[in-house]
Image (cartoon, rainbow, N blue to C red):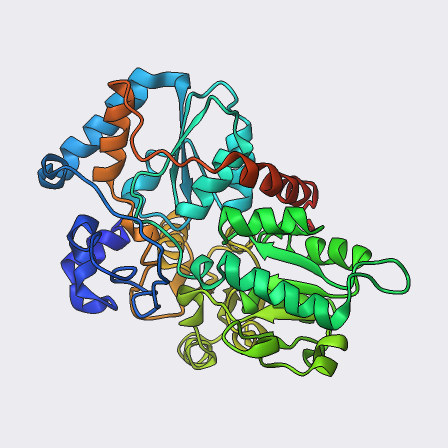
Length: 418
């Protein structure tokens, strides 16, 4: 199987940015998210996640890096667990003890209570979540501290607090029936501070796997939902539940009342934050139409972070785990076009060679921040653990973690629909 990284290295012009062929340490210290799907997204100030990889690891060839990773894992044994997100590059995923989406990995971390170190090959908010749910004596490591998330950064604590105050000024705290006037729901792709905000204010965290269950939970407790930071997941999930678009106003944090009238907020069911995933925003109805024209009978499955017209035009939509199960349930000879991160699509195509599986987006454009995890960083942090040094540890403030844990435990209890 040719990995995404190998494909980009062999033909960099096929990628959205040829710089992806280089090691992430080349652009770790530059402003922004680096080359990839979210390259054009504005990095908020003061988010600073410096990269730090010794030059010796930058110069090591792939074979030596993989040898070091395997040797360190063998030495550390049960004292270590390596988690790998579906969107990670194959060169990293091959070393993971668990591979999954954010919901699955949040649970997987809990299955290894004896592990002294949890190395999370994902992005910053995922490592924060692992630290919140882990024991105080466990160390959570993010191999590259520059692996953030542009979507998560679109909703900061100050902006959400301001929005909350404005909403309560208009809506009050409670409804006549005793329910809350509004319940905050944050997507897993958000900072620990925003998860803590939800925990303090009667809210909950959701993933793409259990978003429908979470919205049902929220409506049992409140008249409205403030959903952040991904507008598309919120809109697509609420629409599938029968909520009309006129009851889903957008909240723009740069404008008073989010750019809405008081009446629009009073009549709202779901208030959507103006955020998005740069990877999934790349998919379009035109791509679906082209796939259907070139492959009659093709089945199209997309992630619910895609814009609503794309979800509506697809045959099915669901989380990364849903997409994997959709492909597994298909038949030899089937043709499947997928609208999600290219590393997962590439891996599914390799796992099912008797089917034609391809990414809707013809341009190889992986998640900019996920792509910052490279075998060099993984080898470096694992070598450190062998030497008794914890490198790139993620530690969430105890007070923040306590509130965030409340919202996360509600999330873990909100099981996805089968």
